[in-house]
Amino acid sequence: MRRLGRIVVVTAVHAPSARFLPDAHKSLRNQELPGGWEWHWVIQEDGTGDAVRPYVPDDARVSFRQGRAGGPGVARTLALAHAEGAYVKVLDADDQLADGVLARDIGVLSSDPSVGWVGSRAVDLLPDGTTVDFPGGPGHGRVERGTLLGPWAAGGHLPPVHPATLCVRRELLLALGGWMALPASEDTGLLLALNAVARGWFSSEVGMLYRKWPGQVTGQRAHGDTEERAARMAVVEARARALATLDGGCFRTN
Image (cartoon, rainbow, N blue to C red; front, side, top):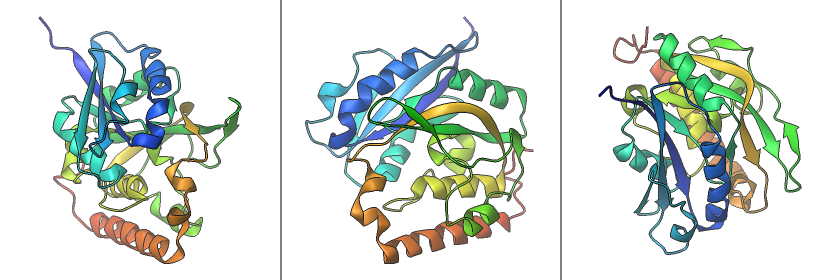
């Protein structure tokens, strides 16, 4: 029997966001994949309490793990131990996938070996159920190496591609060590690292609904602490610049 291609969806979750997991699961079940492909959802709790498990869907395609709390980047990286598939797709616990995004991601990565990662347009999902366009984004198509760092640095450290939309070749993600060991902005750090070493692709079609709600991590006071934020941005930039200097034979995808 021919082995199915697999895309692994990785989600970090903690107690406050666990109640949104059923909505995320519904958005996964609505995906139509190309023939010969399947998805598997790895939910990794950032902690070991009892508050998350009741919200984990009863679905054979879903696995649930727990581990020592260390932030969303640590949780996602731990989940890679169970991400047995060609591609790894990010899905935050409080967000939803737009219809068709997994098929589009698979299509790009399967058809173009020179592309290491895919991002897509995101929209904000407001509490009343309406959506608002998320600003920015490069043009539809290939994103060449090193082209995101400049706009990010010049634009107030707002990433041109929403890092929560990423779909990455598993080997490339592992080569970069997963997500950065930061209390926040770990996904932006990954995006810029990916762009430093590999060509990407940006889809102008909506790939994610980014939920806006009072409990989200980016809305907390600590996230905007001036001193910490400056340190995060400095190390994110320094890492991307350092990676860009490598003659990336082992990192390049072309």
